[in-house]
Length: 231
Image (cartoon, rainbow, N blue to C red; front, top):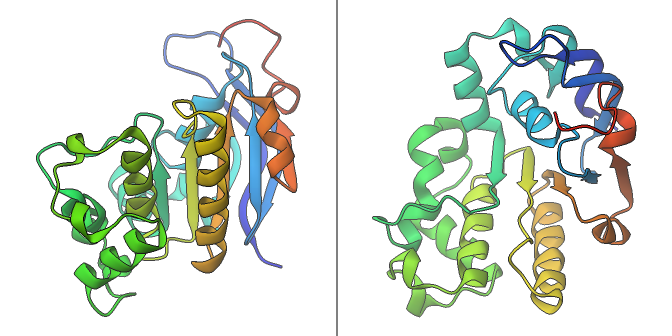
């Protein structure tokens, strides 16, 4: 089984801070895994996600994503790498209100030739994945702000998964859902991640969600820089 993410002796410190917010000896994530990263507020979840997505880079250590050392890339190259290989589901969804549902889902194709070339037709690819997520055709041309929270969430998932990115990162995506809708959402997310051959990293403060995952870590225990205070 190939490795998608590998961290070795990674440290990260925010500017104007005198101590690291992340100090991780080792973290290895294999292709196809669905990994749950649990962490209470302040344990470094946002800092870790920023590193994994190439928004920031570590002060020291080795960080490889899809066998690519991110520290070897310029900021512009990291932006391109993220667009080509990563799908992100944000806590607040970050859908664009001036675009309709289809336009939001096809947005990644405008930033990544790699993802666009994986499909025969971008419009059809968006429709197919929306239908898999139980978004009906009557909603395709709707403004995203006219959708329910659950529907907006599924549109955000469609946008993250369209074009089959190798890695999908979900940042607290169930915080606004009740338990029934949360369970339905997780089932669909797992099914689609597997179908699209995407490795899934799901981050949340809610440790009850770990029971849904075969693999999980507690970041407060993994991050040696965390001593129980806000970071």
